[in-house]
Length: 64
Length: 64
DNA sequence: TCATAATGCAATATATATTGTACATATTGC
DNA sequence: GCAATATGTACAATATATATTGCATTATGA
Image (cartoon, rainbow over all chains, first blue to last red):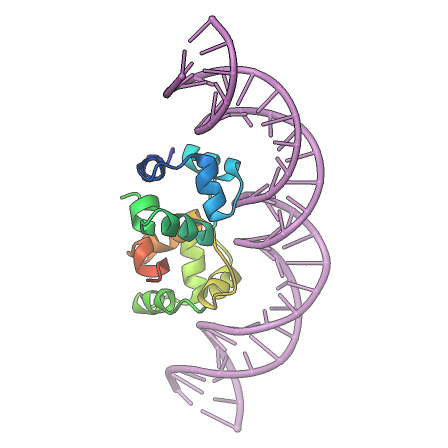
């Protein structure tokens, strides 16, 4: 399932996938694939993304 | 850093590492190593653990 | 319309999570 | 103290996240 919440949080900060990737320190594809729900990031990567986007794990990665 | 919160949540449910591992569908070592903070689980594994323990990602894996 | 940036997508390469097995050390109940 | 169970640890093997590159497609703005 796509991660819409991540995409929204990124766009809210006016960041491209590439810009976010650089801030987080991963490749652009990694961000793209996570948004597309095509894989399963590590916890530390999720945490890094959250911090860059000023969100928490529950905000971006928890589905009720 | 050790994941004390995970260990507490597990013990609260009166589960051994092995019992939790079986409920989650991973090996005992994986649970043990996560509690010891020796690695970096995948998001889907974190979510599975949370669900078994009736917690959320922020409860178990978010450090302020 | 054209140029450019942003994004999706695929193949291959590498790093690392996770497993299985096995053994050592703690811990707990008797 | 002893037996049984729970936990830490090590190593090799495997699965999978992530990187790299390159190209196709879709926006977006002049």
